Length: 560
Image 1 (spheres, rainbow, N blue to C red):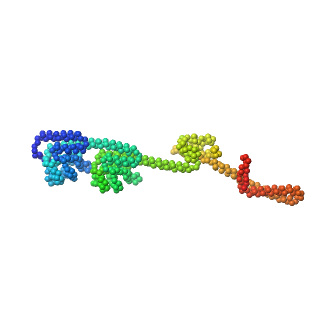
Image 2: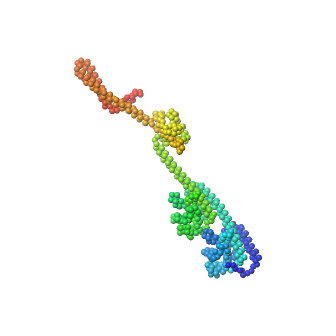
Image 3: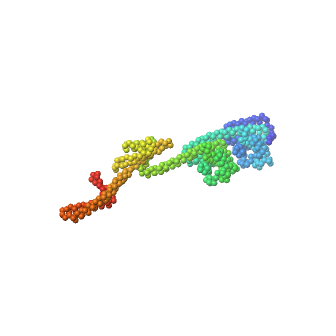
């Protein structure tokens, strides 16, 4: 609705006045780069420049498709806090790019905020769309407490001024966005440097959840990772959020989480009205009003979800979303590195445990054990071997085999050399003179092959077979002497038959001989035959023997 003024001012004077105001506003806009400062400066300057009482600027929130107060001057907080801005018809016209002028608001029965306008003393208002590149980015409202009729020229000038405001706001936003982008890039670099400077998982997670909300001036942050076994999200780190909320929060069925797990970030302006949030009650109780959720990725694989919470209603900019996504990706790489490090540590611990277990087993083996690689260096020796050689493990590992075991000690035969040459197991025995006497050793070498069938390692086992050798010698002697015992019994049995016959004959002759001298000879024969009989009796009853040392190297055997 366009009105005609009651007093007449020359067109030339109006044009000069408009030009003066336009230059002043343009100069003012060019001097200020921060778009909030631009808006504050404009709303505080226009009332004097245009002879109005108040001015407001509201910016279009793309997330909610509503106009949010950006700056105001000359109005009470109560009036600015009302739910509606103007009639639906007016707002539709504004969104279409047309200005709307109204008078006598406090008396218009169709104006829904008539009482609020009357209380504030507002009578006239000119609502102008703020355009930038043919797109509406906000509205500017010029308000008066006296009746003001806006001419077509005034409206046209105000539209041009509003366009300049749009340029100023866009430039200010652009400048601020560039400044924010630099800040965010620096922050991304810092966070990336911090999370990649450590392989400790807790440090990586805590750095992410602490730095991100501080950088974005948000309330707090949570980080959840997918458990590869259950494919369920598990909370691994949080910041700025109470334990009560975390304990009562179940996000598995949250639509925003499902969307994030598909690979796209989700920004929610008002969690109380957004159907992508199910846990509204607990979030509102926690003081959360807006939410940004982004996926944590490693390559193309999604491994978790990072959620940033704001205690103010907030429309997250593309720059903020990109910042969160970039940090989440850097964090994903750091998390993956920390996970790999944990696995490597676990593997090393398992290897060390297995090595200790194997070492304990090898140390319990009574024979000496050596392992030699294909370069003929010693790579393993058990405790028995180390004790006999009188050296420690650090000294023997890496030692060349020929330094420890010369092939000449058994006349040139070495089982290890034979295995490396022929690829077949080899066994040799050799005699060594030690302080406690002569010792015999058995050396057995066995090959271990690589995937190509070449000898990669040789395992040598050395056994002291001195006791075995002595037992074998004694066994042989025992068998030989046992044969002697058995032979003695046989001989005694064979001697007894003629012996008894001769003894009987001698006894008969003793009775028949009359000459005394002959009787004495026969009696001597009888005594000797009886002694022989006693000896053969002992030989028959003999069950064992005992070897005894005699003079020099001779031995005698005492029969049992």
